[in-house]
Image (cartoon, rainbow, N blue to C red; front, side, top):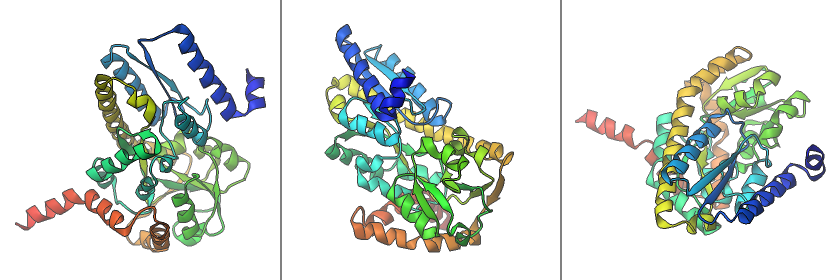
Length: 348
């Protein structure tokens, strides 16, 4: 099996396994059981994966076994690009990961640098009607998205060269970025030399010097063992992102109405749990990382050079037509709604 995996490559090997599993279910004639196969690249211990274990348990229980959930973690079926392609093809029924722009390009708006200031704002935005509309429009591209959470928290930079306290410190550094254009453009705006590398390959890229650094939420930095091959961690809370549960639309549409209702209900609860876990654990992860990395927290005036540097990123995506400045302002209004309401009440 290991030889076959080496010969085919991770993605083709994963596709082969999925095809075999699909044929196996057909041969067993499990006509009353609907299988939902899901995969993400994080290991089983990661908070994203832990929330999906809740999803598995609750969905099977509430459907009384009519839906069987199969979970595959740690990139065993392929990297995030391959997993998204498998969902598009329908050989995999669901995933969470980096390629949400395939479902709706407007999801990229959520990753814009300094769009929101903190967890409260990010949560309000993800749970707003603005986001629900983006979820619904994913159907136009063949996806059902019952809920969207926050992608594991706010991103932080690590590197092996120097502490980062100003965008100038990033100039010329080879920084791994997710294969998403917003992160690529943001890294370039900071002056870095971005390298698009899949998440499961970050550790080796850092260890061998292919890149000098990267950025990820603290939970990913820990789960992927990035702290073992880095020296410095800089906390700026410069960006978070969406974490939609992306489901193959045809599979979902073939569910009976009662199972659709239960599936969506459990999915929403799962994403709320995921956000809760990530928020509660973020400080804990930073404390664990502090044992092996030099940690720098930037705030207030220290952030202004970073905020000024990324203004062209907004201009680029608006000119490209993925979203408008009205969309950006609508998102910010949703994120700050409670704050505005609170200030209005106090003024009375």
